[in-house]
Every structure is written in C-alpha cells, then in structure tokens.
Image 1: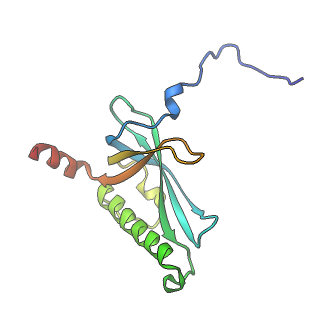
Image 2 (image 1 turned 120 degrees about the vertical axis):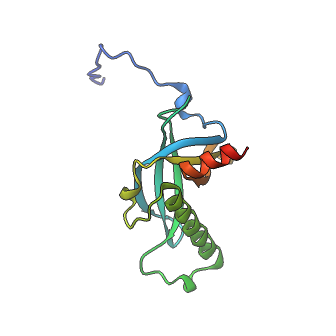
Image 3 (image 1 turned 135 degrees about the vertical axis):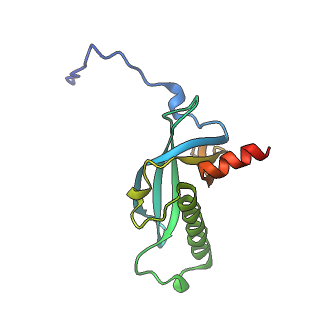
Length: 151
C-alpha cells in the first residue's frame, strides 16, 4: 500500500483541453521559460522556448518551440548539409524572434516577458506522436497592428 497524503480541501481536476493543441491562428504571447539542450542524435543544440498566450480565450496556455542552433566549437563547414540547413533556418528564426520582441540578446532570459504575436499552426499526429502546435512566425505587436489596419 501507499500513503497518499491527499489534500482533501483541494478539489481541482486536470482540464482535458489543457493538452490539446491550440487552434491554428495568431496569438499574443510572450516567452516565459527558455533553455538550451543538446540534440541527442545531431551535432547541434536546440533553444527551447516556452511561450504563454497573454490574452483572449486561450490566455495562460503554453506553446513549446524549438530553434536549432550551432553547438559551441563546431565548425559549420564540417557538418552535413542537412544540419547546416537546419542551423541556418534556426538562425533566421531567432533573428525573427529578436525582431518581434524588439531586442537582440546574448542570453535567452533577456527575451522573457516581452509580448509579441506568434502565428501558430497544428502539426498533425504522426507515428507515436499526438497532434501538436508549431510556431510558424513571430510578429511584433506594432507590425501586427499595422497589418490589421491595412486589411
């Protein structure tokens, strides 16, 4: 048997919608967590960003984003073409994040808590993975407002 130490004053349950992907669309969000992780089967790192929706019906929901980056000490010319391409795309993505939040940074923590717009799509379920969200683009609040006015 196991001792449960259950708090009988807490009757909260898991929201079943918490783990379903957000509908595709544009959301005001900000980075609330970030970390760098080594890729298990590739000679590159990934910047893992946790975005939190800051307004609207889905306020508080989180979206996980991964941006490929070059590992320190790795010569790009020595990498296979597919890894070089993945890192180049990652560099473009990171530059787009910088532009959307209006700040360049050497430490990802400097990008936290700055709202912008993330353009989210749904990545369909594949193999043993459920459907999930993927961020397609990052847009500054100002640029997004201008886009809306032009419509």
